[in-house]
Every structure is written in C-alpha cells, then in structure tokens.
Length: 187
Image (cartoon, rainbow, N blue to C red; front, side, top):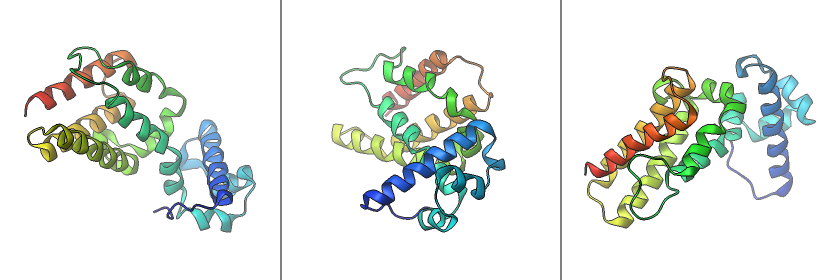
C-alpha cells in the first residue's frame, strides 16, 4: 500500500522521479524483473527514500499507472446528451490507441477478467464516477449499474490487453462502448 500523498513539493518531485524511473525500467524489462536497487539508482534517490514513499514496487507501479485509470474514467464519461449507441466517443478511441507504450506494465498489474491491483483501482474509481453520474441524473438502480459498468469495462480492457479478445483499439473501443450503453439502457 502506498503512503498518503503529501503536499510537500519535494515529495511530489521525488514520487515523480520514482514513477518515471519505473516506467523507464519497465520499457527495458518486465516489472517482475525490476529491482528496487536499479530503480532507485535510475531515479537518483536512496533506497530509504523509496520506502518512505512506497511500500514496494507494486505500490509504485499502481501509482505510476494512475494516469491510465484517470484517462479511462474520463474517456468513458466524455460525452453529453444522448450517446451514440454504436460508436464510442473519440476520447475512448484515443484511450485504447494510447495504451501500447506501457501495455506490458498494465498487463502485469491488470489480471485477465479485470482483477489485480490496477484492476481494483480502475473498478473503484470507475464505479464511483458512474454512481455519481447516475445519481445526479436520477437514474434507476444507480449502484447496480455502476458496479456492472465498472466490472464490464475493467474485464474487457484486461482481456484485450492480455490478447484474449482479438480486436483493434478502435474495434474494442466501439465494442465495449456498445456493452456499456446497453447496461445503462437496461435500467
């Protein structure tokens, strides 16, 4: 588990350096082969500094991937009015198209079916946003549909990243969008 974010700008810069170092390390080797020693050397910080900010590499990796969770949640809510039932919003297409550079890291943190540490964060954040949007709109069964939306998206994303779904980024964006629109219309 990572430490609570601090307001100290030095701490924020240190965490940013650690995240950048992890992404650079993972561009060269799988997360499972990255060691704390190599990571702190690349980041230019002491080992104790690393552990002052994170409980371990997995916590750092999830933090480093937090942007992808934010992007996913924002992309799924990047429309207003009545959604096109067939074609995903451009933000969702861009989201899937932009996953390639760090896809190996995402796969290591997002298990098939949507589990794993990144899957838990994605599900939690997406469910919260979906629930808030449905409650604001006065939609029926807000908790049920929000849970279904979060689970469906996390599962499809994970399975696609793991190669269990054969589709281009544009195709999977449209396919998952159609599922999510159907879920929203079902209640």
